[in-house]
Length: 120
Image 1 (cartoon, rainbow, N blue to C red):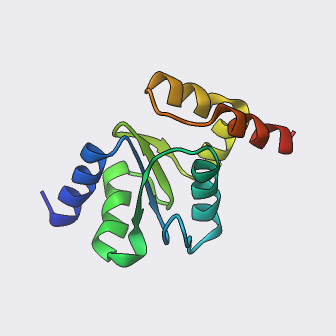
Image 2: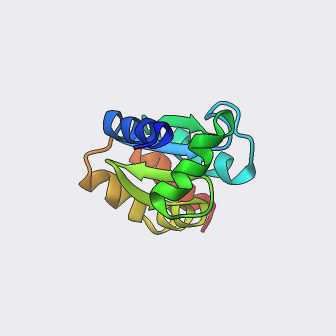
Image 3: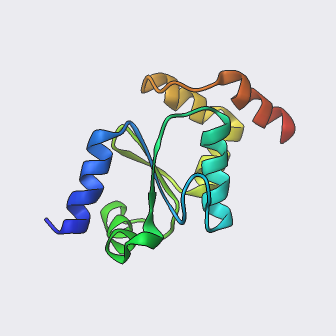
C-alpha cells in the first residue's frame, strides 16, 4: 500500500465524514470545494477536511482510490458519496439528510431545510 493510500485509508477509518477538497473548510481554494464545505458547515456536520493541494500524492491518490476524476470527494463512514454535483443534488432532494440519518451522523435538520427553501 502506498503512503498516500495509507493516509487516505487512515483518514477514512478515523473519521465518520471526510471531505477531500482543494483548500480547507475555512479557506476553500475552488468553488466546488467551497460549495460542499459550505453545505457541511451550514448543516453543522462534524467532518475532517483533507487539503489535496498540500500533497500531490493525496491529490492523485484519492482519485485512484475512488476511481473518480474530480475533487472534492465526500465520504461518509468510509463510503464514497460523490463530488459537488452529487452532494448538491442530494442536499436539495433531502437524500443527504436521509443518508446522515441512516449512518447516525449528527446534523442540523433545520439548516438543511433552509438550504432547500432558499433553492426552491
